[in-house]
Image (cartoon, rainbow, N blue to C red; front, side, top):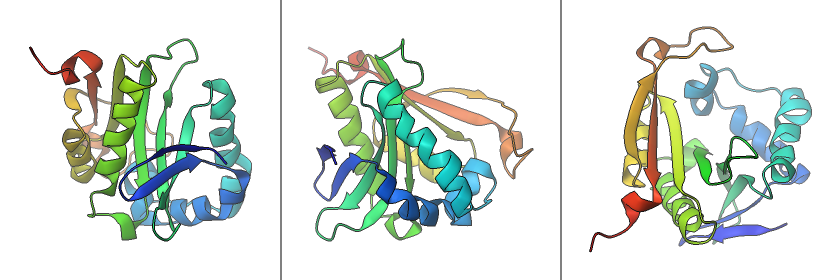
Length: 187
């Protein structure tokens, strides 16, 4: 499996079919899923037949970019997933950033560490022009990660949730972004 990048405490590597059970455990935690679908845990069948095929197809669709498994450098423990890819194959300079970590990894700065490393790699190695992320307005933890990683508030918007309204959705979602020019030091 391909290592995409390494940080001080993590290795971000390509997702494989062997990660199905780990993704199921991650998506099976209602607290992890709270701001994604209202806290409904995924079933193993959903992860096998829907989630994993979607994740794995992204590498081909987006030129080798997609979802990255985060493992702890020291122990190899599965910490969660980072999303870093375009949303359209004709917009390869504009990547979406996302993160979903086990609760045991929360509050340790790992989401910020991984996000900063991905943003840096995107601008330095991949030639991106923009990186963006979004979350529910009420997800203050994720918003803090975005801000610490260097993303800036862009807008609040309202969307229809496939699951129906979930707690907090009446406040909308927020988009944060950063461009390569915004991160360049001013002369």
